[in-house]
Length: 195
Image (tube, rainbow, N blue to C red; front, side):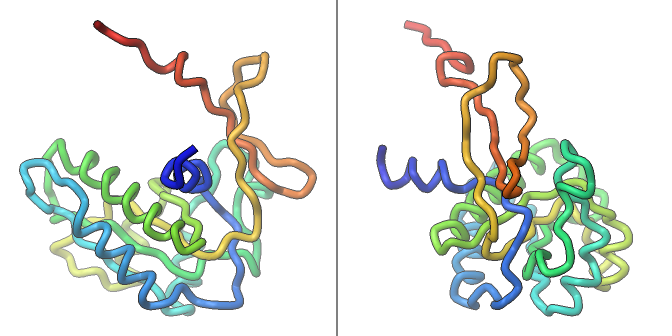
């Protein structure tokens, strides 16, 4: 397995983070640079990125973000002492209706989370967020709307890809140590060839 494939296998979603340190400025810089370099439909570059790194602001918006919808809240939501240490918000122009914006956001988020993981920084891409409340709490300029958010920090748990079980369930689950297991279909199940 190539180094890139190993990185991609390890770059899972992480939801519990070490509180002892911040994400270094040079790593944040690489995350933002990876977003700048990401592909964009028609090269429209319609995304703007708001970095929320102050501890007070991170904690203020934490209750406005919702983790692990497939799990009971007591299992999926980080507890005190496990919260992210950084958020990056993906912003778009208010009222923008371009159908390619979600595609651009997905590409940027993939780049950003991989750039973070190269440095051991885990992440959680989040769409289940209280956009209006976050915008008000952070005084986001009215010319922007929040598309999504990414939580970052150094993970305190493992996340492992496993084969899909006999029951066919794709739901991720936790073990007794609260480590995550994520069932993934085999390549043969998600692809076919045309020759």
